[in-house]
Image (tube, rainbow, N blue to C red; front, side):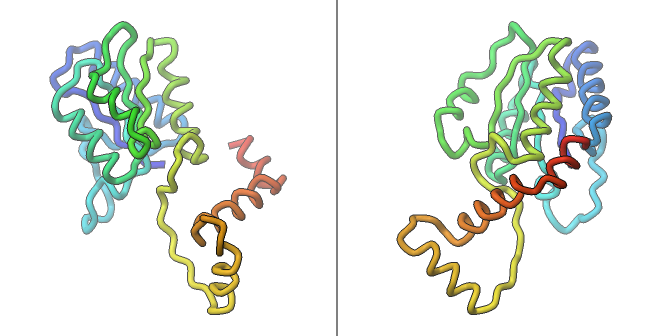
Length: 190
């Protein structure tokens, strides 16, 4: 999983050390971390960097306009965002208002943390992103070529159901995934 980790570059030494610790935690659990502290060495320069990551994590204890801009940009790209703020600090009310909007609240998490809870906050968020839990909308594009007969069948199955063909297929695959014992065992080990 590719994660963009952002922190205020002008923050004090303590927050900069915490930002490095966050990068270590994310790396330890298997994420590839890109950050405003570390140049994002992405492999495909033809597409915007935000298209090539899976999630954004922002340490917002000392917020800047750039943090708000990054939240807006990530939401526009439909990327899951975890905005972390130290316990006892206030999260910007404009960000809190985003949770009132169904489209943005599907991808945005605002959480407070302490040194003791930081690893679990980061790992929990990555787990949600990886499994697609807590994210109400699909984020990964996939091209599937169908025969005309399969397309007609899909149209028949969704007719009158208020579902799209894509929603029908996603639900079908979710069901198969839930029933697959071998897959569940590999996910529990990993």
